[in-house]
Amino acid sequence: MSEDILWFWAVLFFTVPPVLRFRENFLVPGLAMLLTFGFFTQSNWMPDFFNASDWPYIIGICLSILLFYFICGFLVHYYWFKDKSENLKNMGAFSLLLKAWISGNAIAVSEDYITELRRFKLFELRWEDISRIDQSELDIVLSDDVEREPEILSEIRIKRDFH
Image 1 (spheres, rainbow, N blue to C red):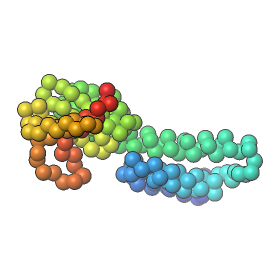
Image 2: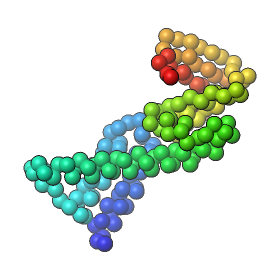
Image 3: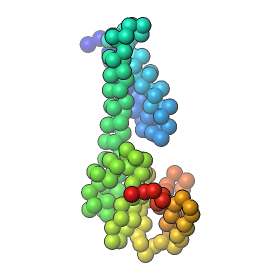
């Protein structure tokens, strides 16, 4: 194993945290993928960009890097949130967290709680703690009117077209 391929693996794992943090912005995963692809081409294989037969390999390698980011992101998301809520654990965290990771958010409803899951954010509300319900043309907002830090969800937004 050459030192150059070790640099590829180092850059691949080093770029995972920024990609996870900025998952909603596809510019960050794209730039991280290009950076990592550059280290791969320096260490293992230099494609000829003017040769059409190399493009399937280029696209395949880039998609593999993006798939790696997606899988790492979901695993971090799953292990971070699976035990955050007893209610979430009882409903089966895997499918809800996967749906939230793919679509950006998911809402789980049970007899006692309503939970909104987003990428790396969770807000759970007991039905009896709801103090405000706002309905606009686009969504319904449920809140307990407790002030929280900006990075923590403080309301549940149900979009009109949410299934």
